[in-house]
Structures are given as structure tokens and as C-alpha cells.
Amino acid sequence: MTIAPAARKSLTWIPDTLNYYPHQVDGVREVARMGSAIIADEMGLGKSVEALTVFAVDVEAKWASRLLVVAPATLKGNWYDEIMEHTLFRNVMVLGQYLNDEGQWRDHTPAGRASQLEEFTRWDDPKILVVNYEQVDKYVNDFNALEFDVAIYDEAHLMKNPRSKRTKACHKILAKRHLPLTGSPMLNHVNELWSLLHRVKPEEYPNYYVFQNRYCVFGGFKDKQIVGVKNEKELTERLNRLMIRRLKADVLDLPDKQHIVIKVPLHPEQQSLYDAVKEELYLPDPVEATGEDIQNALTMFLRLKQICGTTATIEGYADKSYKLDRVMDDLEELIDSGQKVVVFTQFRGVLHAIEERIENHRPGGLAPYWSLHGDVPKERRKPIVTAWTDHPGPAVMVAMHQVAGVGLTMTAARHMLIVDKLFVPKLNEQSEDRIHRIGADKTQPVQYREYICEGTVEHRVEQILKRKRRIFNDVVEDGNFRRKLYTALRDED
Image (tube, rainbow, N blue to C red; front, side, top):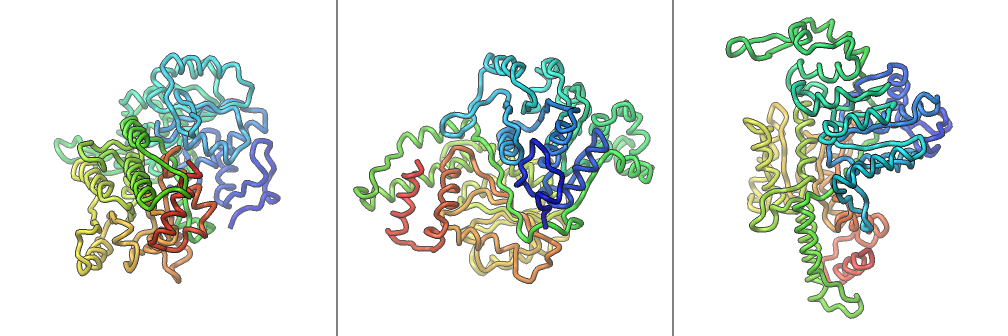
């Protein structure tokens, strides 16, 4: 269920066509009253829209006119898209980047960044500046000179270490309202809460060591390791005054299937390799193209899609990928919240890169994982799914669409990360159905996170499928299907 536009207050900077889930409306109202607050809703419940709406409420009240968004470097473009899609704010600058003619984010030089900040001072209010965490330490004095009213910190658990340069710099940002966003406010130990609490209420939580001694239980080697929490009731009560947190299991108004599209840029090494392969791409007129021309072009498009996954799909290249960086961040958050997760890709090289990242993400590995690919005999596939399902804790299934997209039930997971998709929508839907079965508990919706590299063949294919879904919805492994696909790709190109 969503809130119809007429059922909520109209805001000048929010389109009347934007519908909210009831928990989002409650969240906006609560945070607007709280002042600075931690928005710690579980992943996928719309924290960014809530935070942007709070800023819109502040602008409406003539209490604010300038917003600073601090986010991981790979998510700055996502924030730009969120602002453009869900608000009517149009004076939006992404520090250090600009959009080229192909819709790809490109980097500015240091001189270009300085020029951007100078330009930002001349823009009319209201206005928004989107920056990444690494830029805060260098430019914090410039940001404070701009007198921001509201500051949003996306993936705020990245500030968990009070000794890090990133955290110290973010604590220096001046604003009337601070809104850290995180689905994992406490990744490992209670002491990680201090940085977030200090950010929203520095006068109440001025000292890390005082907080640590008040709420942390020490043990382990020489009693120097944090092994538990004390004064828990008091801490919970204090948290409730400064943090809102809703879980999907408690929010019954979500759709049965929830799709979240995450756009990421290419890593510089991905971009270089992508551009080199693209230079070799030859697209003759579809009427004149031979079957060999079409097959060669589609093979090249697949090569470009592989590179969007990771450079490791090309022989001789190490694994560099902003997309997989984001996949691992999301995977870590889900694993740490106790979830089982399914990850789908169509490429063996991407699957292997994910396996290696799971094993090396942190000491001891991120989580137990199982894999399904072409070398797994058919008779072994169901037992592998059973072993993953029966595992008592969080676990990952890494699978290829072509191998695990049909005939297997993975409803132990409510989260699927789709690293890339096949050209045929029906096959993608079959993969999605592994965790979504008719008759499943509707109070436990499933969530799909789809990762797309901006300004690439992946983005173009997604646009094609939106417009011509019916044409490509049938699996037709013949020249006619390939020619239709080739024609659509060439037209889009």
C-alpha cells in the first residue's frame, strides 16, 4: 500500500505524483520533529527518499535552503538520479564529476573541482552538493563556508571508526540538521554506535572513551576485546530518542516483489578496457548485415557486458569493478543482519570474482557460500541448494542464470542481488522466481537489487527491454531473434 498524493501534505519541491509507503510518511514526520537523527531502516525501505523529503519540508518551512550529501564515491551518481527522479530540486552539483554526452559520469581535474565550488556559490537557493567521503577531509572548510543547513551521510556505518580521517572530517561538518543513513548502525560491536551518536548529538556524546566504558563489556585476550554490551536498557532508551529503525518484517505495506535499480559508474580500468573494446565494434545496417555480422556484433556486446561486471572477465586482467564493490557492500550489510542471499550473474568470470571477494572480504571470509555453475553436475545442484538452505546462519548462493534459473527453490532467501541480466526478460523472471513462489507469506516480501553500469551497453539494453519487452519476452534461439536484438541495439547505439 502507498499513500496517494491527496492523502499527504503537498510540498513545493516534491512532485505530487510521488507516492510514499506509510512507514516513509511516518519516518519523515518523526525525523522532521527530532532534528538531527539516525535513519537506520533496513536496506530497501527508502531511506534516501525519506531524507530528501525532510530537506524539502525544511525548505518549505523556510528553515533550510542548502543540502550537503556525503556518499561513497560509487553512489554519487545514484544520489543525483534519486534527486532528479523524486524531487523538483534542479540546482544539483556532483563535486568532481560531470555527465558526458553518453550519460556517463566523468572526473574533473582538481582545478575543475575548485571551479565547481566557486560556481556553486553563485547558484540560486535551494541547492544541493553531492560529495564523497574522501573529499570531506580536503574540502571541509570550503563546505562549512557554504553554510549548509542539512547534511545527509549515506552508508553512514563507514564512519564507525572514530580514529579514521574520514570520520574525523565528517564530524567537523557544520549544519543545522545531520541525517546519517545506514541499514547497519552497529556492524560488529556497540562502540561503533558512538561516531553516529556524536554526529547527531555531539553535546550528549562528546567522548568516545566515556561511551565505551559506559556501554562496552571487555574480555578476550588481556581483557582488551569488546565482547558484549552493558547498561543495555539505558542505551536502548537513548537510541530511541535519536534513531528510527524499521525492519521489512515489521513493515507490512511493501509490495510482494520489490525491485531496486542501483546505477554505478565504471572503474577507471573498466572504462579504459570498455572503450578499447567498443572501438572495435562494427554495426552495419541491419538490412545489409549478414548472419556473421550480427553474431560478431552480439559477441562484442557480450564482451562489453562482461567488462561491466569486472575486468577479471578478460584474460590477463585483475579484478577491478565498482559494481562488485557495491555488491560486496550490500552483501556485507545483509549477511551482518543475518540474511541468506542469492547472487545471480550470467558470466563465469564474474562468479569467480565474487567467490574470491567473499573469501577475502574480511579475515575468515564474509560468510559460508555455495556456487552453481556449468561444471556442477545436474545431480549435485539440488543437494547444494539443500545444504545452503539448511545452513543455520546467514549464507550466500552464487549462481549463474543459465544453470540455476529454473527448477530450483531458494525461498530460504528474501534477497537477490542481480549483478547482470540476460537479453531475454522471461529468463530473468525465471531466475527471480527462485526466491519467490506463489503462496509464499505475503508479510515477507522479496527484494531484488539490480546493478547497472551507467552509460554502457547494460544501460542501453535495459532501456530497450523497457520499450520492447514483448518482442524479447519469448526465447527464440534463431537468427530472427538475434536480428531483432541486433537491430534494437544498433538503433539505441
